[in-house]
Image 1: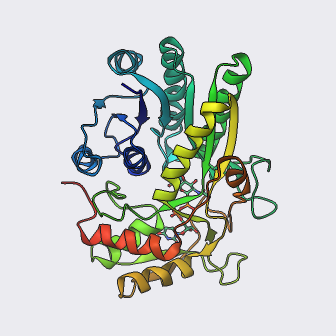
Image 2: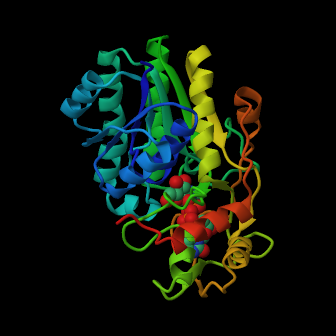
Length: 337
Ligand code: UD1
């Protein structure tokens, strides 16, 4: 029997798409999730997509006992660590929770991996570690100046992982800095299902067009960008998921630490994304100009050439596919029962 990949946060938005991509590649997963910001209903959908059972461990990544039991019960060869808290705004109000879950969760996980003799780890980091870069597109060697508590927890975990690998040459670690993941699996069986009012642009547009919310606030039209709205690098969640598989393959033959941006490598303004979404759904997005949001930056998009050079990976699905797939998911309900 081949070994499985443990996906922490595997019921979440990105984790679920990684589990689906692993299944497409014929690889087994084990999901660890505490359902703090996800729904158990995703697991049945993933089993339908995979056509095989997918073991689920309901538990917290900070819980050493749960981790030990998970590694004991399953033959795990590698870990993709997505479990964490990720709302920029909330992080400044709840620093204790963000530092505890994001940093301590990773420390406990690394401890359990060490005990179990599992040395291959892919970590979900974020382009938010850069803050507002001096030059665009931003490459992996740019200075790290995160502007939020959330971003500082990601930077700290990255440092922790480099320290680990520096002390023990057996570790094989990929630090993946995501740009802005969006879209959904084309089956519309899985997608982004935030609990409560979405913070992020694409899910908020989905629900606003569906009539669940009044208007999408456009957070600032006075940014130093061509149309005055913020520019981001939107990457289809299935491209992102496939990047994790490519990183796992690479780690198989390359010990040490690899740090990579995963992005499409081009930026779109908020108004361009709204326009693409309107085209995809054939309806206007209700919107209203609002003040800038705290912690936002003007513009960021990735230099994704290192991922292409080292992994042979690049994003292949564009903004139209992102919007079409997000809207298909919304029309199918946009949540798990
Ligand atoms: C942020 C973080 C990212 C993090 C993600 C998770 C940065 C650069 N990125 O993405 O690392 O993983 O949150 O939550 O810090 N917008 C509106 N109206 C809205 C919502 C968003 O105008 O209602 C605008 C934002 O100002 C921004 C763009 O849309 O220009 C994208 O925002 P969002 O989808 O929230 O993602 P980020 O803040 O870029």
